[in-house]
Image 1: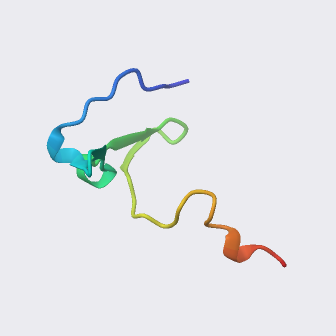
Image 2: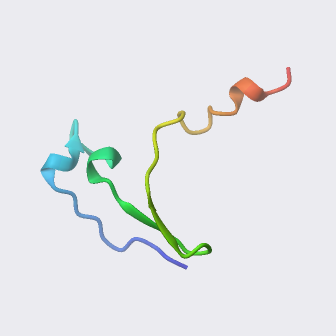
Image 3: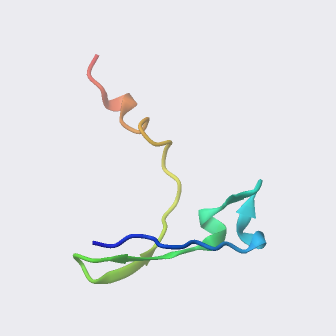
Amino acid sequence: MSFLAWISVSENCLKEGKPDPKKIDPIIYITGERKCTVLGDYIADAFSIGKGNKDE
């Protein structure tokens, strides 16, 4: 199991005082696949992406 112990962000990686993932451009290690990748593009707000697919 992995976890973050400490995060430090340069001021030039902040947007409106908060960390901006695009500016930070982190490398992400995928354990099961033993691969490294980077963050992709924004696709939707959390918990709302499936709202358009609900049967009514």
